[in-house]
Image 1 (cartoon, rainbow over the protein chains, first blue to last red):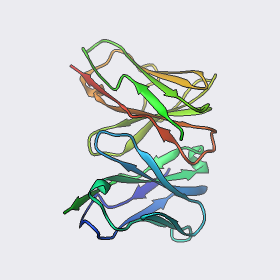
Image 2: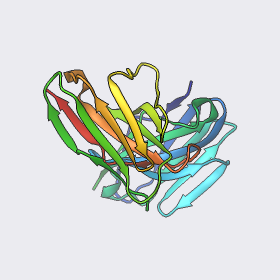
Image 3: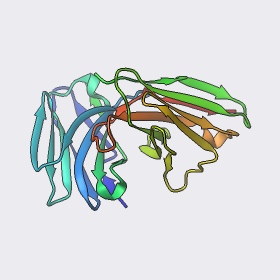
Amino acid sequence: GQSLEQPSEVTAVEGAIVQINCTYQTSGFYGLSWYQQHDGGAPTFLSYNALDGLEETGRFSSFLSRSDSYGYLLLQELQMKDSASYFCAVKARAAGNKLTFGGGTRVLVKP
Amino acid sequence: GAVVSQHPSRVICKSGTSVKIECRSLDFQATTMFWYRQFPKQSLMLMATSNEGSKATYEQGVEKDKFLINHASLTLSTLTVTSAHPEDSSFYICSAATSGGAYEQYFGPGTRLTVT
């Protein structure tokens, strides 16, 4: 099956940079996605990496290393509204193209 | 952007009754819809994958007779929790994809089910 590991919680101050790491184990890997979820809300798509390297989208960037089965989400210039849970999710052939989610990382931004 | 709605957003029911949750893709056709369950401060657990016009595929450990899924059209999937019990209380979230191979899923706002 698939398994993903990410830290359970991260606390940082406004304006800081946070990196959320995600390591995964799977076969037939297609790509790694990141989702943001505010308390009581729906997950929203942030990024998808299928190839090695860094993808930048505004203040958020996502990185993938297929050889290391590792990726990270980088949150820059943190704002209070970034306080949320962030999930990495892997898409793999072995899972029938479904997404398997990590446990989630709660990011708490303090003033 | 792709919008997915869910109805109801919140429901309280008595133990033993059945509850139906609707998931609609509002501005696109969803060939595949997914149903997840999420407990407080936990991750999303996939319950089943639903393809339009065919039977849903359930994840291991999910009772298909208890969680009935119908994907009647390219814009509507329903989840019926039958004979609900307090342990079924949870946050149920659907998502939709434009094709089975899509990497991006569009999530509905979720339904908070409380069984008393």
